Amino acid sequence: MSRTVGIDLGTTNSVVAVMEGGEPVVIATAEGTRTLPSVVGFKNNGERLVGVTAKRQAVVNPENTIQSIKRFMGHKFSEVAEEAGRVAYQIKEDKKGNCVVHVPALGKDFTPEEISSMILQKLKSDAEGYLGGAVTKAVITVPAYFNDSQRKATKDAGEIAGLEVLRIINEPTAASLAYGLDKKANETILVFDLGGGTFDVSILDVGDGVFEVRSSAGDSHLGGDDFDQKVVEWLASEFRKDNGIDLLQQKDALQRLREAAEKAKIELSSQVSANINLPFITAVDNQPKHLDYNLTRAQFEELCGDLLKRIEKPMQTALDDAKVNTSDINEVILVGGSIRMPMVQDLVQKMTGKAPNKSVNPDEAVAIGAAIQAGILGGEVKDILLLDVTPLSLGVETQGGIFDKIIERNTTIPTKKSRTYTTAVDNQPEVEIHILQGERPLARDNKSLGRFNLTGIPPAPARVPQIEVTFDIDANGILQVNAKDKATNNEQKITISGSGSLSRDEIDRMVAEAEANAAADKDAQELAEIKNKGENLCFQIEKQIRDNPTLFSEPDKTQIEDKVRALRLAIGADKKDDIQTAYNELESESHRIAEEVYKANQGQPEEGGNPDGEETVGAGVGASDGEVIDAEFKEDEK
Image 1 (cartoon, rainbow, N blue to C red):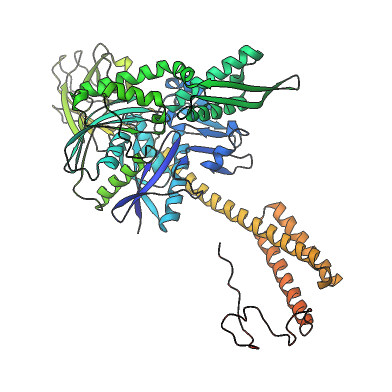
Image 2 (cartoon, one colour):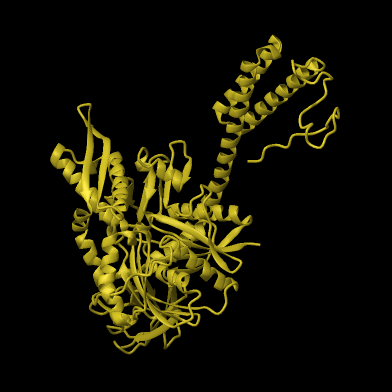
């Protein structure tokens, strides 16, 4: 039976969880960690690495190692050009103006959705290994402040990974589920979520099994990566002053700076200073240059002062939209790895006047909440109602470039609202519906989600035709827009696919490629296993010949050495069938010779052995004196 999992697809780390016996359980990765680094790497031979293994080789392979891809999901290249310049890999613009990642090792471009789908595939595979069955459905979380394009892109990534995405839910809302599952009293809680790439704050009313989001605010371009970047820029600046070299222009050095900056940030959460030492960071005239600086917590906080300012405004906006004061907040929940920074905790406590509740694991709370939502949808969890909101206002462009809001931000979803418009000139045969998302009064300052035309309007004076535009948002926060001419009942509709999302054909192609890659990955794993098995057999036989030279006749030794050589040649050629054939022949030959050796030595025990030539292995276990045990060794299961 297929299982439904909850997935926190994070900027820095991702987590998968499932309901087991009525309780949410975080599933460890195949490598034994409870969080999976959201990193995808490609080797020059085409092999794909995901998670810990990808992160380990990032420094020596920066241009083929993709990190923080979530920051580019659902975006035009023009929207994230500055961030694209920070990463060690290449982000470029495709023909549609969207972001794509160029991977030199493969000579190929990937969309952010495809890279994210590789992370989701890894989580799916690890979950299947843990559960012992297929995983085909998932609830995936997104930052509350993700717009429609980013939500659709996330859903597309899940589909490419072979998952039916039952629901997209907001990360703070998921965290509140993890916190409030067993709560009985009515409470108003503030969920502060600062992850690797995004920041959200949500205010919810929780009680009697109802989780109602009252408001959400945030910044989808603010997270732990930005705090790391401050340290990277400081290190590069100090090194440039001392050595006249710009490390930001060197891909391998930039990757080392990023890793050192993240490590220093983590250290400064528990220590007052961090030493950053990077030997051989670069070379000038074949002379190595080393980087060695000390960063204090006070310096770090000063560097990040503008980032803390960016946190304050969404916090206040969420309070204002929910129409609550800080005195009305019962609990403050901190979520996301970046909340471990003392300056962030101090800011939250200062703004709310309350010590944050640390009863939930900030790295796992979102995935646990997603698993609970999966349990709700699957009927495993009952008596819980989740009422989420749309984070940004939605509407259309009207005459004069004005943004007319049809659905206001923080409206409970799912929701459906209509408004009637008319024409601007006489005999206008069609109208263009330009759909926007944002809070600015002018259309050009908001996010364009899509356009479509309603044609066939009968000739009429200006302002006579009646065009009804309906916005319908589903529980995932994904929008469908319908326009209808009331006179003719002629209508057009569009499901917004957003600027960063993919067409149906593109999704189908990527799904097929993902399935093909899954088969290729399986073949690669089987090849690696048989190569390892063959190397081990060669080693064991060579060791046996070396340690026991008198056991083998020269013809036997020559024959077996020839087969060892044949197996090694097959291993070097990377041909699975040839390796298996050579392995079987070598194994069969070694068994034959071993049998002959045992037969030849029967009745000739070594000094101190059994004079009657009887088998003595295990004779002390349930055997009488002189009894021969007919026993087989059980293969060691590891």
